[in-house]
Length: 118
Image 1 (cartoon, rainbow, N blue to C red):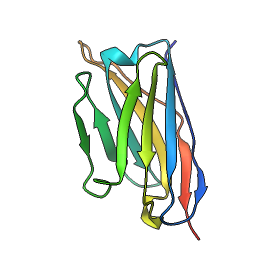
Image 2: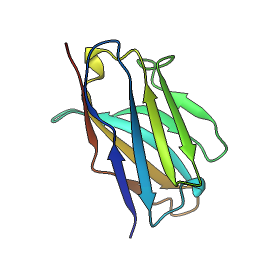
Image 3: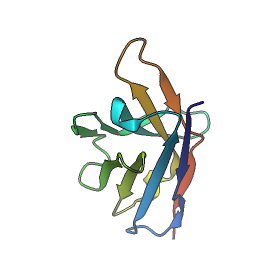
Image 4: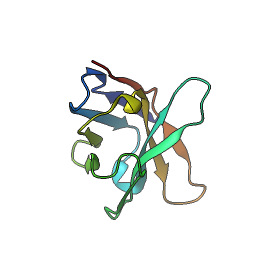
């Protein structure tokens, strides 16, 4: 059974940093496109960062230059380093793994809360 477990969220002051982790089991992240989303209740989820199997990355305009997505295949874990955090970054962050072969199944974790506030 595939499981993605996020951790590393919490309360941080504006300008601070957090590193989120997404530990995968039942699936090899090296064979997946990995991504981080954020979503608030009642709102559409927003793609934050995406990391391809080949290492290419893409980021939402709102986080470019501040967030960095990376993976450690040996640990089967994906990370999201978040620097210079702003109150508008407050949200629940989820990681997502999508296989790159048909039928392209996709899996999502339960999420971790990030709150940026003074």
